Length: 76
Image (tube, rainbow, N blue to C red; front, side, top):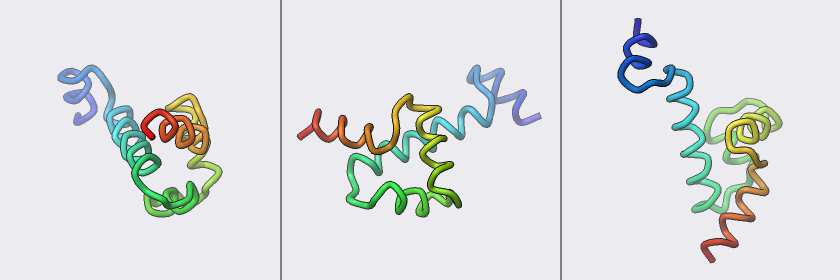
């Protein structure tokens, strides 16, 4: 029922909404923190760092490492 209501109001499923929020948080941490990619994965409760990297790449289109390098180059 929750998924139906969210989809009707926002046009996306609950899982898509949650994944968008997770990706936003990962991007924020990659830009503003000095933790390694593996440390960020642990902080966000990903049990497997390789799954974390695959999850990020599937949603963001680039690896976490490449994202960090490109975004820091852009803003520094």
